Image 1: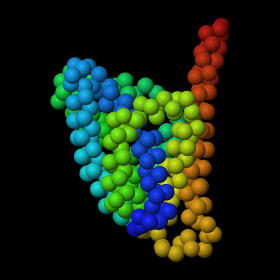
Image 2: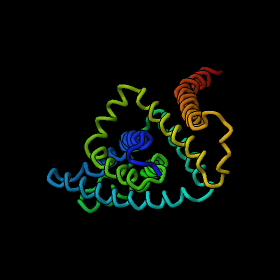
Image 3: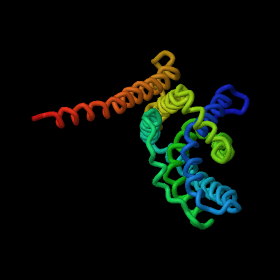
Image 4: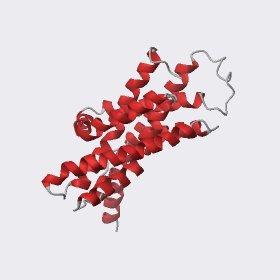
Length: 241
């Protein structure tokens, strides 16, 4: 359990804020899309009620996440999920948000927001649970901090990400770092397994961060080259006799 007065506690606080910023952007976009057809007077209500429902749902999800992370092998599974989320974060943007239906009624918009958030918040919940190290104060902080970030701050962060791609890389590395640390504290592993490895508490998180960044960047570069390859093949096919 992390103590309030320790540097580790405050490092975890900074990690949770970064997680909320990096992973809250998609939720903010979904909220905007769900409410875009509401009358102007009801848009703010739709956003507030939708976020309120999403936060309640997130509390339930993170409670179960904390319980599950105490089960043998599930921290390792959670770490693998964080690696995948971090790698996905580094991939080229797509227009998947356009599939979110815009509701014409307040109730419909709130329902859309809550359902979409339930699907999209698993990454945020697992990441916050991992960074919190079982500390309920940090868990509560992560939930509360996500509210203003999702409602007001995410659009700004998305613009900064577009302008400064290094922020996205840093976010992916952070998720890999947390995942690497989670693997060391899984209940299924002997408590003294890493005792003989010098600087293990730095080496394993750093390895996780490098794994995410190198894999993510490699896949992103391959994805960017793919259209050019397909276009070349198409041209050759068209000019072939």
